[in-house]
Length: 446
Ligand code: MV4
Figure 1 (cartoon, rainbow, N blue to C red):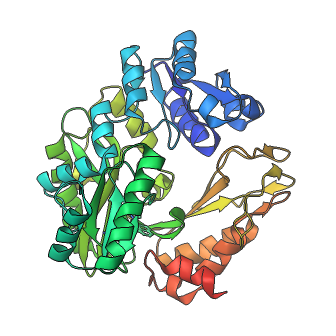
Figure 2: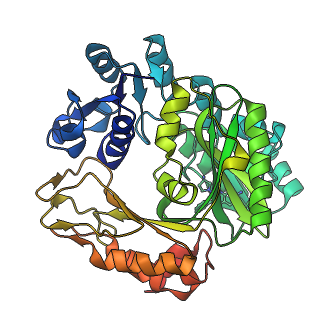
């Protein structure tokens, strides 16, 4: 096992990784920007290294500075968390070239899944169901027209180097297609420096359901169930739940087996998430995330598995030590992402935290790096806490979530707590009747 891990991240996820390390007897190294000198992740870590000024590109994205920090402190491994360099294959390669273990999948796997055209081809080859669409990239408007005629309108054009919703365009007929194709290609070029685009049939009212996988370096793969992440605003997840209200046991077991077989075929290792659209009882592969995700705690709540601990164990070369039949799913978990933003305009609200009082009690978890008197810097994302609640029944989980949200006190910055209170009081949400467009419609109505 590792003696010392460098955590190449900040905020709540840096704390989450630090906690897993401490419980495994591993020393931690924090890295931080000058703006984060007073941050909680710096205070908790055994050692801390300043890696640059406030803008992320000069600090948390500064590959050479992070690797130097690992070399100077003698860290044996780097955990990238989520965001920043977590899905940067070049960085993962640099880390390994310096004899430091990368806590994540291989650079080759990260690179393949980062290219959405290659990822989709790998998904098809390994037996995952995909949305009907172009066979690879689409190089001309004429080629786009032919694909659209074959699959039928509406169609969606996506950037191969994209993901997360950037650079997508929908077309409902051939006249819209020309403009959609040209804008998608131009946006792909300017945003990602790669103008490759591909096409799919546009699904109108799907849910976003993702499957968590964990794999060791010896071909053992387990699926840790699903998360329903349909509640999003501008491609930002707002609230996630596990299990999905849309699936029954048979459907869940079927998709898990398909995913497990596919990941074994691909030779995936470490932690990963396979994103699907789900409509009319069918799953369609979207993309794969080759990192630890923000919403991992709801999976931990329903499986009892510490996924960060497992991720560190398998990265160190340990075998999983259990198989799919040993995984038990129990109860219901919901996560609310609480951002320092105005709950109606979503304008960020950085500033000094006054009173900070977190809810507690049975089956309530708060992952946060905040404390009273801390100044939320304006340079990074605005999430200040994740509230995760478990219940034996979904209704019990909802009642506890309402109680916990009502108990939360955050002064000094505006937060999205009132938004969560409104969502969970809505009958559609209570009934589990929502899709990827539900939240934006709900916000428009008020
Ligand atoms: C789609 C789609 C409908 N049909 N693909 C958005 C993020 C990126 N990962 C894929 N996205 C979508 N792809 C087809 N063929 C609708 C979306 C989409 C979406 C997906 C998941 C969660 C929220 C979303 C909001 C708008 C659009």
